[in-house]
Amino acid sequence: MGMNTQSFLHIDPETRHVSLDARAHAFFGAPNVAYAALHAETPTFFWKEQKQWYFSGYAQVNALLRDRRLGRQITHVASREDIGLPPACPHLAAFDRAESKSLLELEPPEHTRLRKLVNRAFVSRHVEKLRPDIEALTHQLIDGFEKRGEVELLAEFAEIIPVTIIARMMGVPVSMSRQLLDWSHDYVRMYQFGKTEEDEHRANKAAQEFADYVLELAEEKRKAPKDDLLTLMLQPDKNGEILSEDELVSTAIVLLNAGHEATVHQIGNAVNIILESGFDPADLFRDETATERTVEECFRISAPVHIFERWVLEDMEIEGIPFKKGDKIGLILAAANLDGEKFSDPLSFKPDRDEGQNLSFGAGIHFCIGAPLARLELQIALPILFSRLPGLKRKEPPTVKDVYHFHGLERLDLTW
Image (cartoon, rainbow, N blue to C red):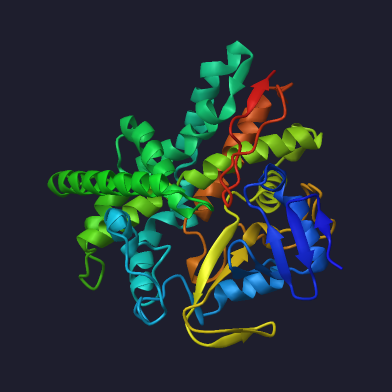
């Protein structure tokens, strides 16, 4: 006999088949409740609506993210015809081209070469140099609304910090921030459940405009090199290899999108969790260790990206389920973070928790390249926000965006 969580989730533990409506507000508004039900009954399950197997246990997700029999792409080992994929859609040509050399999608050896080139800019010691910039920007934004006594935090704070910092790192004029946000929002529509044909057209248009802009900017950097990531990406590596035009475009798009989309959500999620928790912010951010743990706990309990998919690259069996080359599986990072076998009392916000890594940034060769930057932005912005605005509270409980499998708020109205 399965378990029903209201009407949107039906679990049959015998067959491990689950019916779950990702568009049900009760689900995307509070996914942790559904994930807890899945952990209790069947953390590995066939999701009927998505027509594929999903894994949500911490040990499984952690292992599968590192398993080289699974990959982000399949076409390097099989043609579309081989595995019964339909031909590519002409109306997604620009999007497909932008994705074709994306770090998120590639496998070794291409992935290794590209990642090495980019990683130079994202190692912790490089990112640490951005601290004064992030601090100054955080203060400047708060100066702009402090006297007003209220703010919608996403538009006036959470959206601005990550996009400004990644634009500066890349060497994109800050005046382009709004345009980058618009392109990025349209582009990532391709990853959400239940996308429409209109979403596809918008994503394709964004990919085309984004690509044209990157190439135009690269041309400027070639003529007048600057101390920024785009200029660095135009330089040959120590073997004299340079990025092709497609590689340059794909990498720039991935860094600009990933460099803010998830972090915007995470700043909003974290502020919301802290205000809801009743913990004293002064205590949460009392020193460096407390700050780091608080930020990690926010990432654990409210991950901004919930699912990463993998292609099965060779016939294999996982937990007694046979998979064929060309199958796809889903790994629910956000649910793995709530596994009671790894984290005690997993649905509770425990800011001093020290029970090992959450999986919000993934694991293995595709571990998020921007993790040091995202962590630093939260470790700087949150303590400053809470110390400058004592008495900060929510005007009303916020609404969660209907964009599963990203998790973020529509808006976050605060007063003090």
